[in-house]
Length: 471
Ligand SMILES: CC(=O)N[C@H]1[C@@H](OP(=O)(O)OP(=O)(O)OC[C@H]2O[C@@H](n3ccc(=O)[nH]c3=O)[C@H](O)[C@@H]2O)O[C@H](CO)[C@@H](O)[C@@H]1O[C@H](C)C(=O)N[C@@H](C)C(=O)N[C@H](CCC(=O)O)C(=O)O
Ligand SMILES: Nc1ncnc2c1ncn2[C@@H]1O[C@H](COP(=O)(O)OP(=O)(O)OP(=O)(O)O)[C@@H](O)[C@H]1O
Ligand SMILES: N[C@H](CCC[C@H](N)C(=O)O)C(=O)O
Ligand SMILES: [Mg+2]
Image 1 (cartoon, rainbow, N blue to C red):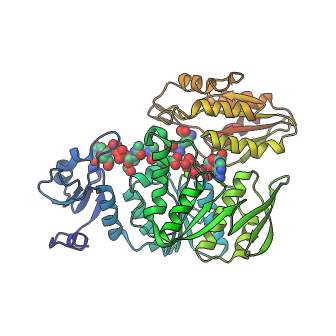
Image 2: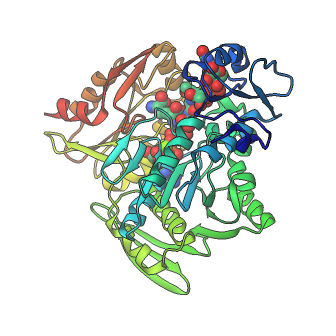
Image 3: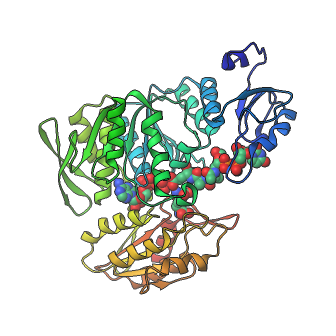
């Protein structure tokens, strides 16, 4: 592709690729120079040009010598839109999900429902880039803009026609997915997370709302879990833009959850849609999984799925890795569940999901990530103390923080909790304590295959450790 095709200018140079890290620049690359959280990418412009960059997307007053300066006040957005032209075409039907919790669950469920309908579907999110039977990790929920756009173009070349991706608040703030046309966007919920990055809840919500105010196609559909207190902000945006509104929830108009009755290994749902009522046996436990399943159904219906077969498909959904995944039954007969809950709201949802299934006590083991929002730690302790019968506080991914200090902040909210230094030891303590009528919940890391301590990632999988300890 000629550079002139991207800039509308008369440059004859040929574009060979895009990069936002100078260390990945090769001859013919377009380099994006962005002010970041740690460093300013503009400091690497000369190095990028020395490595062969032929154009630099940067703020108007950045210094660019020896390459075309594509100046824009919002360089991240401008870079993404140019890169999207280069990596296109993309799948015909793309949907995005945002919200504090539920994104991965909804995206994976949407992919499963599309596959049941015979679509060639893929997903991109916390679990990586997933197509039938194949998975590639990216390390982020919403990958960096070059990884994202190049992979979405690659999926289209492989014949994928339907893509579901997670639009994290960081990803939306940094324009990581700009340029991919979004046919439907879903809002799950908003509660406390990532305030270390956004500063306050208003900024956090504003970041997420951009999915509906700017990213969603003007003739696209907004799928909203209306039972969340912040849903009205999304509904108002959708109505103001004239987007189609698919409202879902106990107070939903399009898909209304009429009733939900826990069964041994799942739950019986009655869903009202189009003047009819549908009975569905969802093979997943917990109110939160019912919510995610209905949001996924709303997305499939928003992109052309028929109501009846889509709702029928819910009874065939497979569990999403690390989301209320049953790892093992202890020798005393207690089931051990792994969940990804790492915010106060999520921890409450996971415990509420399990409580009805525990004839005896609910024992919870969790910690909190280092170099992440510190303000959520005490509330997580409070929520655990309020809903579990026995609480063990341990480590999650300490990263660059002192694990004992993270545990101390959590314990401020859970005075009665036990503190166990070391995640494996804490899991062992919970399993040793559990009797036949009890349930053990290990929360915070879900599907994760490593524990981040300092700059190291130590092999650690909650499911594997629970099975080893219970053996
Ligand atoms: C805080 C944050 O979101 N940081 C992300 C962001 O980095 P940044 O823009 O702040 O970059 P920086 O490190 O300050 O560097 C500035 C610029 O200089 C460039 N650079 C830097 C160094 C160098 O030698 N040469 C060079 O060119 C960088 O490529 C960058 O463009 O952009 C990078 C490229 O896209 C991301 O890799 C990086 O994710 C970091 C690793 C991260 O941990 N992000 C987490 C917090 C995150 O994004 N989580 C969300 C939320 C998950 C959820 O929903 O809960 C996610 O989507 O995963
Ligand atoms: N609809 C929901 N309402 C409340 N809690 C939920 C909901 N869905 C999931 N959760 C909780 O949040 C945890 C994470 O779920 P999931 O991975 O689907 O969310 P996510 O938004 O992708 O999270 P992340 O932002 O960390 O990627 C689950 O393990 C569960 O504890
Ligand atoms: N166990 C992880 C969960 C959050 C990971 C991801 N959502 C992010 O914020 O990077 C942690 O707290 O470290
Ligand atoms: Mg996720």
